Figure 1 (cartoon, rainbow, N blue to C red):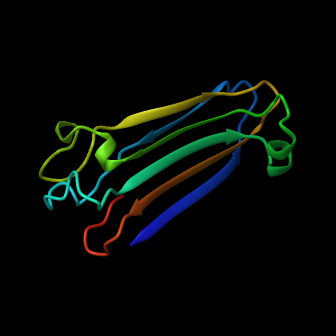
Figure 2 (cartoon, rainbow, N blue to C red; figure 1 turned 90 degrees about the vertical axis):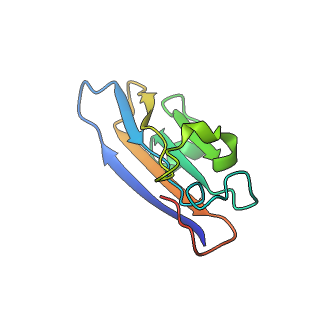
Figure 3 (cartoon, rainbow, N blue to C red; figure 1 turned 180 degrees about the horizontal axis):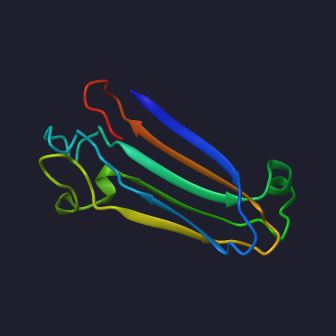
Length: 119
């Protein structure tokens, strides 16, 4: 039960103009028969550029994008009913010219139960 997340920060090389993150949401709530219930597991993917100091100053070289959704935001037909997996998706961010630092945050939350996980 609760949220699990991971964060990675890395430098990009000269000439890199875009960062892409490929992800797939999976929840055991779907094969467990709990789609549409209060056990509305969710995920997020967030890509941003710059350091924490740059983020706070609203520098023009900072940009970000995110994908956030919960199980019940999707149609049941978007899930594999046997595994609870969705199709692979991709989130991308075009990088500002002076942002060699990228941070990617990914998380998933299992809502209100500790029996049927999400990943």
